[in-house]
Length: 405
Image 1 (cartoon, rainbow, N blue to C red):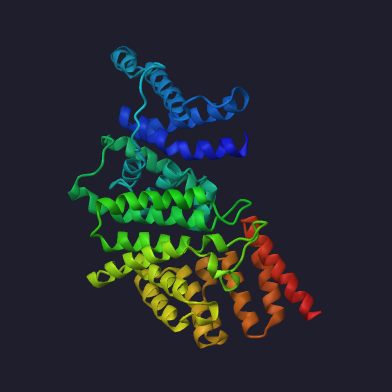
Image 2 (tube, rainbow, N blue to C red):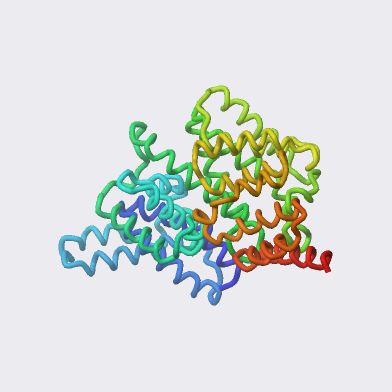
């Protein structure tokens, strides 16, 4: 399968799943049917060429799979008429609406815990692999596969119709939906695996869906904060990689390539949200991004402000990755020894995560401990699953080793 076909199928998968699930009312069965349609397309399209309407092709193949499944049930006679009414002919129209947001709310079902709902949504909406989702949650792939399987079974057992939740139900699901969109954007902006620094299909889809959701709930400050965070972060994307795709760290980026329009839009959203005094984690992260984006150069960054924001964020979330970022801010604002002190004990929570080694290497280099910096960079490179990040870390280790020789 070519990269072009793979990318097309990844983009069409949530639309096809949304259309099939809405038509037949069963999320779990629809996902199985769409997965079979995607496999069929991966085999047929490279040999036969793309159909005139790839989405319609997927929906029709998945529909036939649904029909076959129901006809094979023990209750064949009672289901025969229903199955026949489901059949789509080539002349039948395929719904033009985008059901991706509806699909996202369905995955964030109230019967599911966040630990199950969020991975399921990332799988169904973003098309992330189980391995990619497991890496984001810092758990083994087998554990994540079990979570996703159990989540699908719970939704199927609930027999809930495929529809948007009522306003009364929406609040409970919205926090999960926002977290899914946040993780989707992060995987797109800084991919955990693969040959490229970023996957713009994922980050772009996260921004698109968040914009749609913000259009329906413009008074929600955390939703505004999440959209602001995405825009302020994505504004730096054009400068994050070089002409050959190599990773360029923040300190070395050409800020003239940053998207001033996205920065202005993100700052405006944040400025409107913060006075509501319902500050949450996305608004705080957006505020950190705004400080970075508004600095004329790296040397002008207000690290004391960023350190204070990360302190608030860590109190709010207790997230070890926030502590990691806070350590960098502390090193820049107060000296590397302060940052290194904040890393104490993080191994117990992050294990052998390559970003912990990368941060420790950076702070060790700032402190003048070159041998430790080299060793930590090599450990970070060995653990990185994104090829560009691995190459960057290995290059930095070679640079320090060459200077120390």
